[in-house]
Length: 193
Image (cartoon, rainbow, N blue to C red; front, side, top):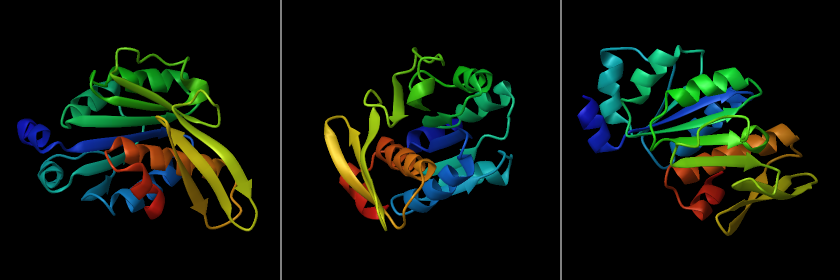
């Protein structure tokens, strides 16, 4: 089963920390436009493993799995993208220990230096800080909110339906960044948000 999943390039997005419910909800909604996606709860055996064959991207919220459980579960996937946006440094370290070298750590910029993960091939940050890999800038609030998301030399505008709070802007930036990391064109992500 593991070999089939890796050949199929099945991916997991694992979300931990503040705003997890919002991030998981919007990720499920957006990624489903591009891939066969499934939002899951705690990993099960049997039928769950069979469902891995029919979906390309799985989204799972951290429910305090043991590190050993995570390591075994993460090994089922060709790639794992872990989103950490919390102040629980100890929990973040536990999750990072379970990652393979080729997996991706996507972390809020203020926590980047507090958490290990230098052995990972992709260790990216997001936030309102200019040093963040996915940098949110030019926030404009009126009846609607718009902002720019900057990544790897590209800048793409995003619009939100209402006058949004900082947390909602950050969640939108995280979700957009994650979809880009899953391989979707930055402009396509903007059009579908």
